[in-house]
Length: 114
Image (cartoon, rainbow, N blue to C red):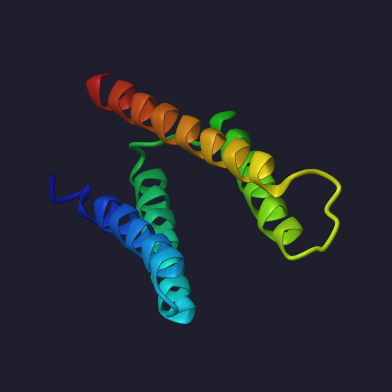
């Protein structure tokens, strides 16, 4: 559990940041928490890759594509007449990111069992 504390801290900070941005007027504080949360999760994945517990594979493409869709959706929210409704891109990006997390857990568990 100790090794996963960085991952869980990142997820919690990310969720708190999103809630702060949506429920209050402290958008900068929410953004800072989101950035710290994403950084914690990234550091966790890099540490797992360096230790050999995680061998990056094709599932990394799922994460990259999910991030591209998510960030494109956020960008389109700022446009007056977006090409596509931003919520579709944001939700698709989140689904792909969740798919990556599930696949990441599967890969690290299978590596640990070998």
